[in-house]
Length: 175
Image 1 (tube, rainbow, N blue to C red):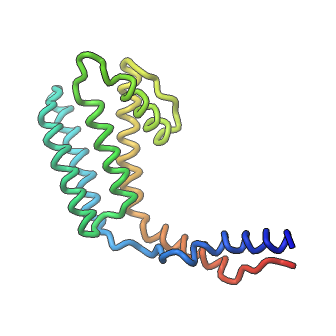
Image 2 (image 1 turned 60 degrees about the vertical axis):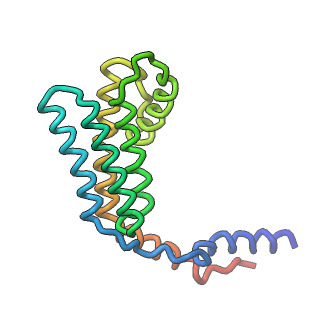
């Protein structure tokens, strides 16, 4: 009896994706996501060419970018995965560019940057100094590329998921 219950539970778990809503291909507009990513690259190019740290320009850019992203998400032009990762990317940019003269936010910033660098690069965050700044910049650049790859492969991922789910349509436990 126990084997039957375990077998039934395994079948239920394997076929659960079939019971859920069909993940399908989200109706996203890749051009919108690409434009959001390109605007970040342009901002960094502008900052690098000036050689300054225009905090207010960055703040204005981040506010405008998240507003555009929210609107695009609400209109179904961005999928939730892209939006969540894009929003986190903007947050990391804000954290690294915003002044913290008293060092009050250092523990919070270090914790988030440690997680971000590890998840994007698979490296331990260096913590402070010029190496850490370069490491975060490298992680930001990699995440921009990862988000572009995400946009380019939405249909491929949906097709692979469908093929994976179809493997379990006729799954029955062996007696």
